[in-house]
Image (spheres, rainbow, N blue to C red):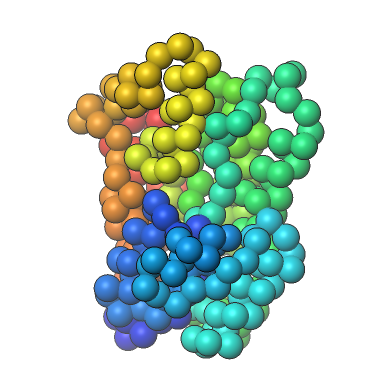
Length: 251
């Protein structure tokens, strides 16, 4: 079995943006895809199998895995792509622990619980692919984004730990680190930034584009292509890696 053909893939945050692009890409290449998110309307629009779940809770993670296994079979590819952005953050001394706790619960605890739940069957089968969507902010902290940057940095530690623990069992674990990508989540942060600075969201996006040598931000499909490769059988030699998809910039 080559590529992802016939493999069962569960993709979180699949209702829009990078997650949706990844789900559509894997499905087009023969994977049996389960899309997971909180919005049923967005999931239904994908035209793929889906499960509605709150991945910021242990129960929601368990439901997503159980629904996938019941309808499609054992999960062979796990794409942990869901997460909160930093649009609502402030400098660290001006925000309370509620923001931190919510960010960690969704961006880091959720991927941990999902990994813990799917790994036993991957180990038993001797095959598995896990890909986490981190961020360049996990390497280079952004202003007024302490919780987001910390959660994405922590995700890299989780990814490397899974690579070490599960590597002897034919399982790879990697992370993609997008910079700015034109998604709805990033657009919310652009609007928040624009409001605070008294400029237009379009100007914010121009500033973001200027960070990259091509003078533009990445597209969801460009990130999805890297995720899709890491999910393949042929990517067996890549594990424990944090791969930037940021058009040649550290951001």
